[in-house]
Image (cartoon, rainbow, N blue to C red; front, side, top):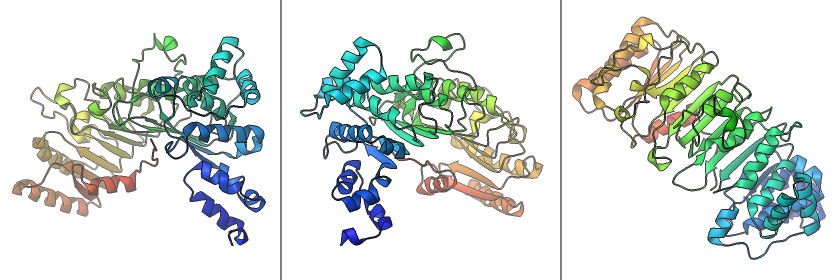
Length: 452
């Protein structure tokens, strides 16, 4: 019955199987299924997922042998999704695989192709034979020369994969000529991985989007120290074609200097702060703003979200960013009030929104940490509507901690009427509410899920 189905239906059935291992078994069960599926099952590959079901090293070794023996299948892979994988450090801590399917002739040839250093060759082959997934992935990933998207859940001390990416970035011949999108996450639910691990992706010519979850700056960028950073890959100012950066639950403790300065013309940037769950150090929003100012002519959407349970902004001397009046192409702005307007010694704003916003703005969303600022926000929105400083403005949002006071609730209703008269839609959200999350998911979705 199954074999009588059209090839299109067989492909849909294969796509419903979550694991690459299962799809390979289905395709190899008979000639009819192999003919129908052998290319489509390689378009999107997911490895290092659910190792309790299929040993991680078995997933990776079987896939590597398959594409080595049939290089055309390697070219079929467009999406690679990697869960966290075993490194030498994790194997030393938790144990090595009991069984490794190791073809010495094939693996020795691949290692010789990857490096001419005899000492490195010897160590690499030993680590492959011991079943360290990190060593296997470093041989596998560069063979996927038609990749469009890659997702990495970084493991502890993934030296083989990180070294491979640095070598690929330095290669005169593009290793990933078609790669457009890369995502990175930390392997655990606490702490984070360094943003610098993703620096090689700024060297790949087709890259356009870079995103991540639970990342933080691992190095303080300076122009003097740039050539001697510990990752061995100097940051080249305005070298990259990446236009979109999207970070969730992360920490810009050095202002993401290495990422932002590498871009030629950034169009969208979003940073959601992960607070102490990622790093016991606050984001340096001042340095972040200084780097983003290099893109004031091209940046179209900007979102800077704070950790509501993190450090009090008044304790972070680098919380204030600056004016966005010169960001001439900015259409969407989501930011904390006291991050964009100056304050006096008592913490009260000393600037007006009309003085620090660009005329290009279409969506403005502000939030505050001190409940006393809600009245100021409402007043500033009214002044903004009166001024026509932002003639293209269509939506304004307020994230609040409650509208229980009668006077405040009345002022919100009055503002809503003013907005309707001006053709502007007012949205109010309680901090952390489902309504707020659903709204931003529709306006600006974080379009990637990680399988740790």
